[in-house]
Image (cartoon, rainbow, N blue to C red):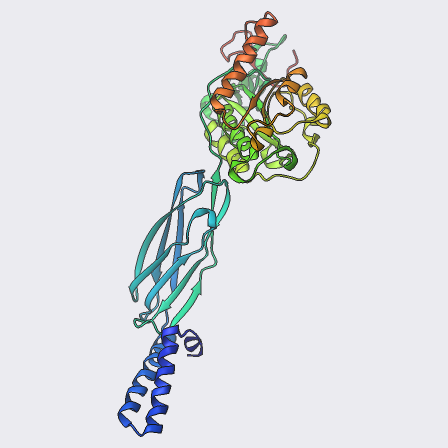
Amino acid sequence: MREALSGLTVRGRAFVAAGVTAVVCAILLGQPSLSRVGVLVLALPLVSAFFIGRSRYRLALVRTVHPQLVTAGQPASVSLSLSNEGRTPSGVLLLEDHLPYVLGTRPRFVLEGIGHGWHRDVTYQVRSDVRGRFEIGPVTVRVKDPFGLVELGRAFRTTVPLTVTPRTVALSQIPLGGAWTGSGDNRPRAFAMGSSEDVTVREYRRGDDLRRVHWRSSARVGELMVRREEQPWESRATLFLDTRLGAHRGQGIASSLEAAVSAAASIAVHLSKRGFTVRLVTAAGEDSGHDWHTRNADLNTGPLLEALAVVEPIARPNLDTGWLTEAGGDGLLVAVLGHVDHRDVPVLRRMHAHSGSALAVAVDVNAWLSPDAAGQDAATMLTQMGWRSVALRPADRLEAVWQELGRRHTQSSRSRGVHDVPAPPPEAGDPTVVPTEGVAR
């Protein structure tokens, strides 16, 4: 009852004040009829508070967000399923879901007819033009009496995440190069000695298909031996994103950093669809969760886009190079860079030396300050160091810039007298290559 009285609304407090005033005036003026009106006005909010305070409602909420991973500018649907497991009615329900301001205004709903076994489903949409990871919720519930005199508040503590990834565009296929590497313990290798039976079977492991049992080798060895299947070759690619605060210009979604993140996201999706195993490296180094992994294109792009969705600028002048010392870092390198000066030259040379093929999209950050701003051409500097580079300006379309990067590769190949791109690894059906394990060439 004390909680219910503290939940009197402005209307309820006005009724109490009017009732007390009417009773006092009736006593002073000797008007018994006025006192009856005053008692009625005073009793109405008190009776409402009594019933609201005595109500035993048990509200249950289930929130569903679909999909939980969306691209910037695309809507997501939020569904709220509420039910009342209490035994007494609870009046009118006012529902409000808390949202970050970038997702829009807070949705509010008025639900009536609440009783035992009551159930309602409400749905609304959210949309954000800003990438990031946002928490939807918690939901606040306010229960009112039918007269709007008493209001009690409750809050659910649960929240649901929504990840908004950068916008991406489809990129055309261009010559990339890079190092091809095998994966797993069954990678195809050439051999120079030994028979095929010695190098194409291994011991039986629990869970192996019995149809793969090699009976001739099993009889000779005395235990079950199975044929080893060839695994596909894969090409590794490192996607480097310059996230230094001092390397970019502009604010918000119109900044050069957001253009770089969007370009990196498009390149990541493109490389994954072309069969590359992609890892993401920023100016702060490599996250342990973004190391090499063997997945298909659909499963590979999800973690990459989620990582790019939460990328934040860092206040450091230099690029981290710790990831260059790791084994297997000699594949394709695609860098999306911001402002480059003389301090970055040694690092960029090391990055080029540790890669099989180095490509760069240099964001012309000075153009984000003014279209006529003239600054040092980072793309030219990178080209002089051996990179295949191209500049990206605010008015440029990423698809056209990516195609220009491919044309520059073709022109450089022709100038060297080279007409073919690096050949892919041998096919599984090549008679000179058989699956083996631990056999040197």
